[in-house]
Image 1: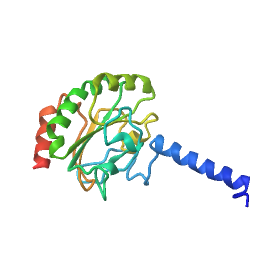
Image 2: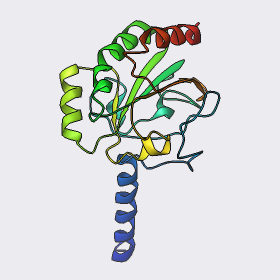
Image 3: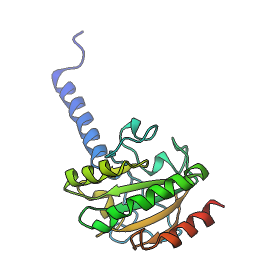
Image 4: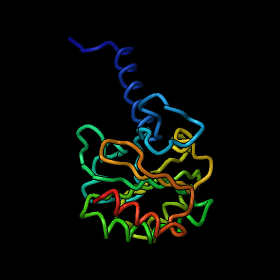
Length: 193
């Protein structure tokens, strides 16, 4: 026995490479539920998986992560509430949101909040530098080709969503978090209580 024929080995390697490529580029795991327009309050949050720009202990050690790490059926790191923010270096105000998001994570993380940022940038170097400078304690995920943003109907950031532990959207905003900080904080408190 020499094992599998050469053609079969090549097919296995190609399939494995394709799966890795799909996961690392955020290709949808499920059929889009309404690509083209953002999900609305009360709808289910579309799932995704992306690689992180930054290392967050216990969260980013597993490679690609997504909403299913925090909400839904058997999440690896259960959260009571996820604040999902779409950002981009081409919309500088979203980078300015990082300190506010850090405050939310630190203030409400112990009560079940998980901040997650999806960065839709072809210029991954600029976003990596911005994330590195900020020393963030929440994951900033790399959506280099904008596939996840497109699937969520986000044509230009900012956009924010509050997602409950089941994966249902409980709040939506198209304002920068810095401009809507008080209302976002109020919504977080309401949903965590």
